[in-house]
Image: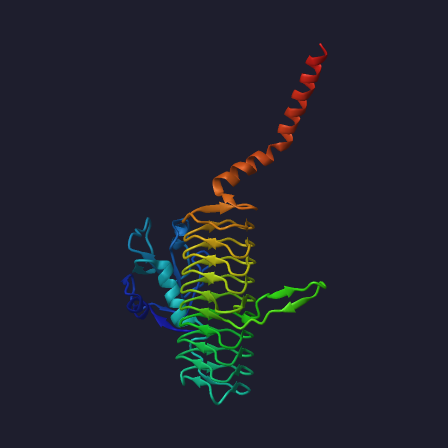
Length: 346
């Protein structure tokens, strides 16, 4: 349990204190499920009622907050309570940041260049000519193939595999079970119905400040690179095929599959279970609803799309209204048809 003075937290966050400065917190909690002697935060006004009943002893609030009743809590006033809370979690409560050294059972090749500030967990393998930057944490049972480079301050959780020659930037997080650089799905059909495997001789290049969830598969390029640019966020269980390019700060939710040689522009938002056909381009700022299917390129920036096949969001919502009304519309058509036949007989 970490003991922190409110004054220390305020100094770290650049905030001001309202209430006792001598308060000490020993943990963190949600404001509606708080525990005594913890730090919480108020970022959404719909939770404001809980600030008067919470057991937390210190609360992060924004500069616009004005109490509607008396408070016996210590407030730390900051510009953005949510981001301030995230900063506290990362600095004081992240379980991986304090680890260092090479644990027993880890294998580090003699030609590898591993900075002294790194942590390498038990049973992890570091291949030939690997370069690992400062403050990198690689948890147990990972595989880092020959020629891989990893930038500073990366966090790679247990059971991650990074195949040969792949490159990972700084401040990137990769969660358990993910595979970086597995072969792309390249198989040439033959006249007799069999397939010949196409060698996948490219790599994967991942930028800075990227986060990749658990059990993702990022395939290496046939030639060149599969590219994930700075600031990208990938949820769990995502498939990224060979030669895909994902632009800066794009966010993709779980169970999405991106076929080969497709390019997503920067700042796209992709819902869960979206499917992309291969060799298409998605414009900057495109927002795509869950379970949509894209079979052709999107050229207009900042569009909102939904459905299978995908169409503009408003059109898809109108279509769904019509679809729900189909039984009653059919009944009306049947009645009209009966009236026409009846009038013809007269």
